[in-house]
Amino acid sequence: MENDRLRMTFDPLTIEHLGVRMYSTLPPVLAELIANSFDADATVVTVLLNDQGGGKEITVLDDGSGMSFEDTNKKFLRIGRNRRKEEGAQISEGGRKVIGKKGLGKLSFFGIAHEIEITTEKDGKINEFVLRWEDIKNAHATSEYNPRILRKDDVCAETNHGTKIILRDIQRETDFSAEAIADSLSKIFIVEEGFKIVVQRNQEAPIEINNLRRYRELNVEVEWNVPADLRFESSYDKKSQVTGQLMATGKPISPRTNVRGIVLFSRKKLVNVPEYFSDSTSSHVFSYLTGWLEVDFIDDLPEDVISTDRQSVNWGHPEMLKLRIYLQEMIRWIEQDWRAKRAKIRQAKLEERTGLKIGEWRQHLPPAINENLEAIINALTRDAELADEKAVNSLKGLQEIIKPYPYFHWQNLHPTLHELAFPFYKNEDYYKAVAEGVKKYIRDIQAASTSGKTDRALIEHVFSPLQPPPPAPKVLPELSVTKKFKRPNGTDFEVSTTSNISNGHGLLARAMWLAFRNPLAHELASDLKDSGLYTEQDCLDALGLLSHLFRRLDNSLPTA
Image 1 (cartoon, helix red, strand yellow):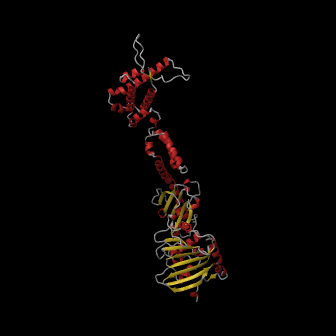
Image 2 (cartoon, one colour):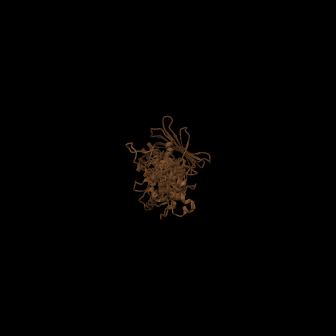
Image 3 (spheres, one colour):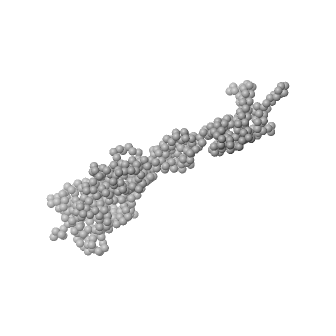
């Protein structure tokens, strides 16, 4: 009659400590059940949440291999059975690396529910039984509990296979949230093709979990595929076996998301909650970095380095210490690469907002200015805490102050001269920049004069005419550069003062004509450009003087 009974043998404290106390929230419990489905080669596992009516009920069903009556007795109901050691295999019949190892996950039921109904089909037979927490506690005297059998080896279709687990008498007051549970499960499993996890509440639309769900609220800015995108040297012998994806966000990750940090998975299930594998918490990148890494090889170590609740690993183990050092190296490199990539991204955004190409702009700035500008540009593009609006306004302000070819713009030239000379200045034709300005200045004098004279004669007639010997009457200049102005008290300047200013102005104008206009009658403009006789500084100095002449002309009044 022994074969007609189901038997669970245990120390009562085992159930108490490893079931009720370790698994007091819903996601870890469901994760254990899903892991069992994965190890049973299920392709789909569905979590049905029912909170309609008076009570709450959760059903987890899969299309895995199922269990025979004998399997249930010898494997499922044995607390602490080490499947891998007992069966001598790490791989399921379907070729998966199995997750289960300690044989304690089945106790997770009792962390949230007091009654468990299990239905399982395999090889044309169906078995169904019930576990009750109160009955288990009352069986402490014999340390053996006999679950109530509802069906034993009843006939079912040969093609039927899988297991359904119903959790009843759930100790929970609030309603279920399929979204919240799906979010939590997405942080516990890596989902790959061939294994689907679906969560559904009542008659709501089902939610299929995928790997991106855990990061769906994040604005991912930079990504690294590990190890393909890593560019640092390391002597760690298992670096090629550390795989996954790391991400950095555009804004700091909120702690409420529970994804700040890097998660470790082994055999598609969480083994270490998010962290940065460092004793320091001051690194700037920590607020932005997230992702996951798979380290399946830690499951192959002779010693068990994964905690029972799969929330952490034993970092004191020599092999795990080597892994930790490698992860620290990885994050240090990621931080440097992130800063460089983030600066480029931020610069592109700033350029889009301002319409300014920073690289092109800086190409037209002198080396001395560029050198001093470097730190400012780096602050605007690399400072993650600086608001975009402030960075945009700062960059626009910089561009307004330091325009391309700043030395030219800082001359504050007369508008007419600025517009005329700039194209020649940019082309480094420094002589012609001034010569064309002088030609324009003479044309403007002609427009203001009625004499019909040209060149030197025009300049002398308009500003400082040659005086005939006495007793001929004195010849007045046609334009006065001083007539418009008076002393602050309203009186006129002395005649000698205005005469000196007018004569000096005429001499300056004639000097500009001699230096920059007259040589064109005797030399090729190209020779004057390429000779080196006129440097950039010569050009800027001469343009400054010529600008003064233009402004004086603007303020001139007829003498008569």
